[in-house]
Length: 300
Image (cartoon, helix red, strand yellow):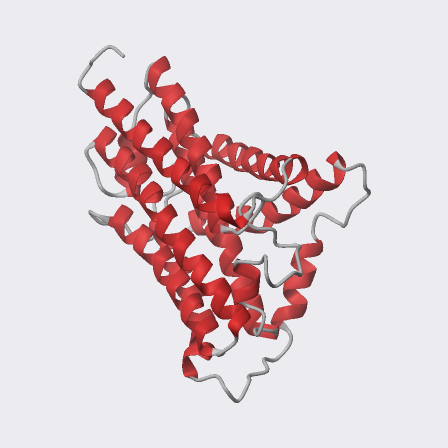
């Protein structure tokens, strides 16, 4: 149960750290580190307004999105605290739960009948389909290294590795950060601050949502980012010193890295996003093969 509390804490802190990093690097005072929490509380205190065109699919999409992410959170352990749910194959279940949330948001966007939201939904479906192989490959890499298919068993039995494994886990964390940028719809794939419908991806899908529904979508996005960050941080920490404090610090480093990327990089052209995401999958496959050769004790 304590692992859930800590993951929620990380989920609430990462957006604030990203905002502060962006403000510092751009020489601005910026908003408070906790402003995003205030914004979320305002959304959750408001009611929802529905278009007469929409059906029940539009109404249940945020609920299922948040429920799928919360269920995925129950699977992920944190440090010495085990996961609330742990079973063989939960690494696969984790990937499919994230996919379920994405699919429901896509259905909700299509249910509005809006051409803008339909455009964003089609882009989200494409990028999700391209990013999911990378997510499956990195989770499969962890399973191959330890011989287990449960996150709790994986991190408990990872053990300290040599210099080669530490380097591989650093690359693993690099890939996880790239996946977070895609899943969270952040620069360089998308820009959550934009208001140009023709260039938006994730934000355009939720244009018709407001109040409590939008609050659920926002919170679910933060938790999904935190879950991926915790998995990447746990994998790296397990290669040299598996400790809860170390994992939290690495998660905060990930948040700083996202802020640096958003400050120093421009958003990709839409035509380049597919290539960008495919390079993430290629890197994931490379890590998988390197780990396979290390397990076979083949010099590379």
